[in-house]
Image 1 (cartoon, rainbow, N blue to C red):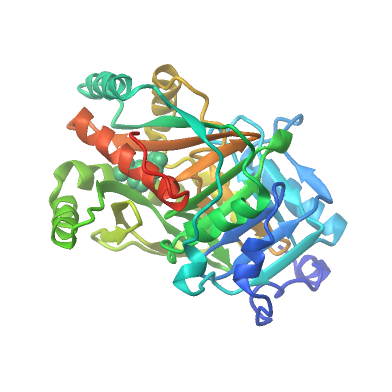
Image 2 (image 1 turned 135 degrees about the vertical axis):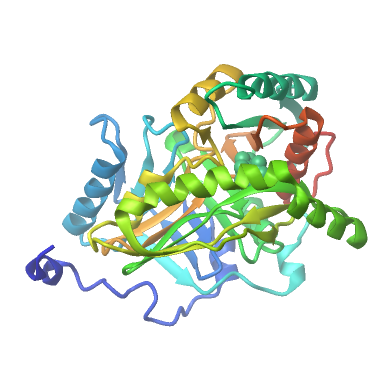
Length: 405
Ligand SMILES: C=C(O[C@H]1C=CC=C(C(=O)O)[C@@H]1O)C(=O)O
């Protein structure tokens, strides 16, 4: 890149971190309305409202690189600070990124405990697991057979829980849902992002796909899980079982190897810890490895990196294409934006994307929750079912629901 190009960039450069956020993060979440974008991360809370432009890879059939370039071009044309939104699980499907009319920023979302744990006023609802629990166990068993001796090393299989409410959840309750999600996930990424046709994706992801600030990039892949337990001693035992589990350590290694190989062409000074850490989330323990590096080319944006990385084997599998084909063959639904990414990219290429998990798609009165598990040749179908049930609890807990799921 030439110096002239850099000088030509709008002076919105340092807008995101240099000015102390004057807003109250709880007010931002409470101000959320369907159609808005909200991301509460450990660094800051962003609420983006209104639509100046929508950027999607349809109808141009853009690759990830073209999409990232198209976003930078549009931001410069509009002299706008950022684009925010979601990337779908299927890399060939349309992304949904919005250049908003207004962006409000506050510090990390923290508040007195009672503000982050209020009962929601919800109507009655019907529940349908897709597939039924037995069907999920069978699917896992089928995948285990395919993994044994085949070229597939790992595949992530998800199941869904459809909640059909008798009445639409109103916007105030959605704002409170976001606060309830953020309360127990101070190190996570609580989000609501608009999708086509008035739909939205809402959740609290523990997983950072990618963060870029200047030349520094960070990713924090998670893979390998055990359920959290109400009893503290049993909870610690569950964490210890995870640390000692060969299946989970193997599952984690597949992800780290893939992420490191994908990043190599873009970075130098790659820092990768030798061993994963044990990461707590509200519903499960995870194995996690924080990876950071310096970008070789300052023109590579957060969105370029996010589209290169995703979906990692934490959401798809390895090798990616074979795992993707197994997923489309075995899962009885289209993932849509579950398993994709949610985040923002600014005019200077900085940005942050979380992996779209522990989330649900909201469409009118319907809320479809998703939970998936990394399947390895030594996976036990019953344990994977339990793990997926635990993962549903992130969202169900924030809604105050205890369900047979
Ligand atoms: C696919 C999901 O989680 C992924 C992220 C962390 C740990 C995972 C696991 O241990 O299976 C999954 O790979 C999900 O929550 O739906």
